Image (tube, rainbow, N blue to C red; front, side):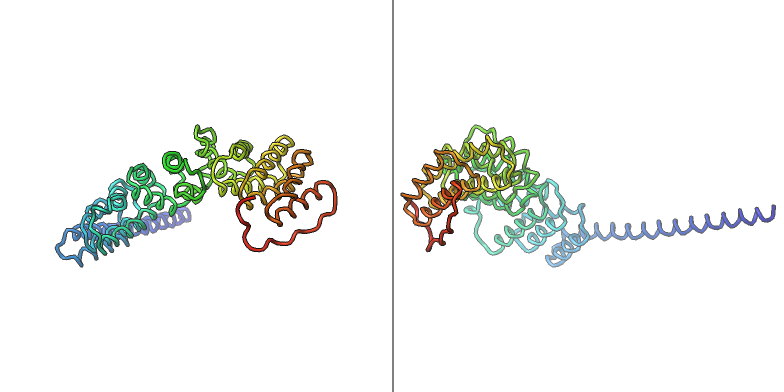
Amino acid sequence: QYAMSGHENRKQRIVLAFTILLCAAVLILGRIQLREFIVEWWCIYKLSSVDQDARIEAVNALQKMGSRRAVPHLARLVSEQNMVAVAAVKALGRIGACTEPACVVLMNILTSDQERVPRSDMNQRLITAAYSAIIRIGGCAVPWIITGLQSSNESTHYRCIKIIAAMGPKAAAAVPALLESVRTRYAEECDNADPATNALRVINSPGAETYLSKALNDSDSCIRFQAGILLCQLKPDDPLAIETIMRSLDDRIGTPELHLEAVNILTVAAERGRLDDQQGRRMSSVVATALMLSPEPDVRLRCIQLLEVLRSTDEKILKILNITAEHDLHEHLRCEAARVVETLSGGNPSECPSPDGTLKKGW
């Protein structure tokens, strides 16, 4: 009984010591949190000081603490055209709180009509700080950016596209709005150089696949073409995207630059060797037609090279290659076409010399 009571006493002492340590840790942690809480609210109180330097110091302290409670208070400072406002904007970005007050004030700075706002060094500083802050906040700010993207003001629209492009894949939720922008503002040109299309290429990430797949059935032919190209960059073997690109190329939609990009993407799909016979024949026919009709020598050269990858011995395609070999304006293209005909016919072709300078447009 004595031995057992000693064992029980040791057990009780261990439990007591552990309890004391736990209570001490809780008290220390509580004091630290209480101290941080007091400092945080003291800094928030200092934001209303008449001393500008004290307010900037308080803003910087709140930024270092990552104080989310301070976000509404910091947002109210942004309306001032002074260094306090610039410091508050930077703090909102570095705290990274995706709240309505923060996103609204930042987008107000970025989408304000610059023609009505007097140009000043302070105004430019605010815009630069807001641009960096909204990008730091990231994808959760996209709903507010989309609102600006739908603006009828061209400068506001362009600024929002720049923000989305700078965010990159984090802005995948903006893909439908960008496609709508292509439809309403750039569909007549239908090329790969407009701001909205460039932003789509920067965003292009797995998060955008769902939106792009839906866009393949869009009523606008330019949207379908752009969506097919973007989707093939993510999924080179997507049969619906490949078919959409071939149909658009066959219908001569878009600019020669877009056609060149489309042929390059079809080349990647062909080189992967996963096309069935029907897809291969369809692609050969489309590419041979593009070879005949395109005024761009770069497009024609890529078409010749793609026909070599596809290895089609169809009589019509060989005839088109022979016509190119005999009548094309450019010696290099004539040589490449003759070489591919020889290759497809089972001969032993010689390599073509590299072209001198840039290929000129036309036949």
